[in-house]
Length: 100
Image 1 (tube, rainbow, N blue to C red):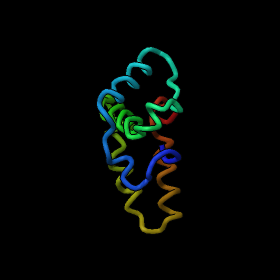
Image 2: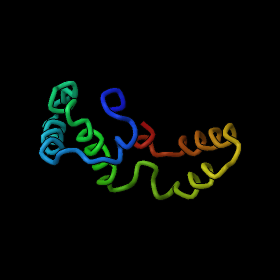
Image 3: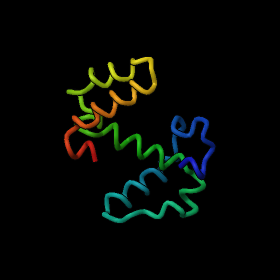
C-alpha cells in the first residue's frame, strides 16, 4: 500500500466501493488477489479500506479486550526502549491466532 500510494492519509481515505467489494470477493473465494492489477494500483485505497474493514469486523479485536489495559499501560511508558520491551511482553500473551 505504501509503495504505490501517497502515504500521507492513505489509511484514512476510502477506496471506491465497487473495488473494495471486488477485492473482498477475491479473498472470500479463497484466491490470493493479484494486488499488482491496475484496478487495485489505481485505487490503492481500496486495499487499505478492505484491511480496515477486516479488522473492524473481527468478533474480538486483534489486540483483544482482555489485554486492552495492559497494552494501554505499555504504550503510556515514556522511555521508548522500556515501552517496546513491555509491548513485546504483552504481545506474547495474545492467543496464538492473534499472535500469528
